[in-house]
Image (cartoon, rainbow, N blue to C red; front, side):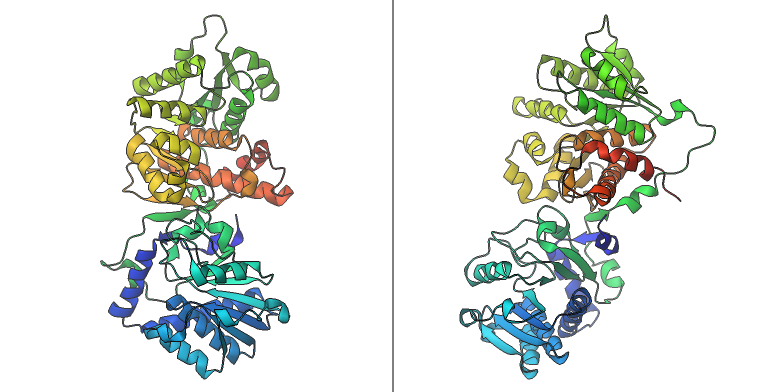
Length: 519
C-alpha cells in the first residue's frame, strides 16, 4: 500500500458535492470564503515546504477562478517566506472576481512578480536552482477537453524538469471520473481540500496526481454530517478494512468448516489458470479445493499442488454435477475458453447455482460467455454471484464500447450490478466494487500497483474471493476483502522485488500472511 493512501479519508465525493460542502461551510457555518482560500493556500504551501525543504524559487501558474486564487495566496506566502516567486497568469487579472480578486490584491501587496502567459516565455525553471512549479490553473469544474491558453500552460508545465505541486487537483483531470480531459498536469504532489475527490484515486487519476495529501482545512465536523450535507456514494477501502473480517478460527474447526471451493475451467493449454485460482483459494484459507478441468491437466496440477482434488472432464463417467452440488462456492471462467466444452461447463455451473443456491464467481472467459447472452436477449440477473470484469469484459457485458466504460468507471460498475445483479468488480487502477443491494455505494480500493498488469492476476483474485465466500463472508464483504488482500499482496511483492517481472504466483506467500492478521 502506498503510505500516503492510509492518511486519506474514507469518504470520497464528486466535484458538485465538494462545492456543496464549501457552501455549507461559508453560508451555514459563517466561515468567510477568503478565509477558506487562505487556509487552502497555507496547507498547500506547508506541504510544498515539507516535500521540498530546499525549495528556493516558485513558478506559480494561475487561472482566473478560485483555484487561481489559491495560487495567488501561495505566491504571497512564498514571497513572505523569502522565496523567489514568478507568477504566470493565463488570463488578465481584470477578469478575477470576489475571493480570487482579493487573493490577487494580496499577492500584489507582497510585490509578487506577475507575468501574462503570452509574455513569460523567458521564465524557465532552469533559471533557478531548487525551483518548484505550482499548478493553480483549473479547479474541479472541468467537463470538456482543455484548450487554448490553458492547454498551452499545461503542456509547458509538463515539459519542465522541476517538481510540480497541484493545488486541489491536477489541472485537466476530471474530479469525478479520473479521466484526462485532453491533457492534464503531471503532478508530483497534489494537495486536496475539504472533500476528497473520487477521480483522484481511479482511472488515470493516480497517473497525474502523484502523491496525494488531504487537508479538511479544519471545517467543523457537522459540515459533513448535517441533514443538508451531501452523502458520499463512494467509500475508499484498503487492507485495514479487510482485516476486521478475518477473525481467528475456532479451535474445534475442521476442513469442512472452511468451505469447499470448486474451480471450473482450464481448456487445452490453459491449465495454469485453474491451478492459480485453486492455489489462491487454498492460500486464502479454504478447507477443500477441487478443480474440474481437462483430464490431461491432472498430473501437472497434482505435481504442483497435491492438496487439490482434480476431476477430469474426459474421465470415465465423470460425475460433474455431483461435485458441483457439493461446492460451497463455484469459480467459473479461468482458462475456460469459448467452445462447446466451455459453454457446457458454464451451463452446468449456472444450473448448480440455481438449483443449490450456490454462490458463483464468474471471471475471464466465463464473463465473455455470459456477454454472448446480451446480444441474444437472454441476459440473466442473479443476486448470488460475483462478476469480476476488466474494462473490456465490462464493455461486452454492458453491450457498449470500452471507451464508454472508461469515460465513467463509477457509472459503469453501477450499471453492471443494475443489469446483472450480485456484486460486481470493475478492475483497474482504483478497482471499484458495487453490490446490487447496497444503495448504490461504490467501494474504491487503493491497494495495488502497476506490477499487477500481467497474466494470471485475475485468476488469483477469483480464488481469494471464492475462498472468503466459502468461509462464510457475504458476497460484498468477500469481494471487497479479496480486492484489498490481492492488491496489498502485490504491494508487498513490489517491496521485495519491484514492479517489472512480478508474476501472479509471487503473491501466494503474502496472501497467506494477510489472511492471518495480528489482531
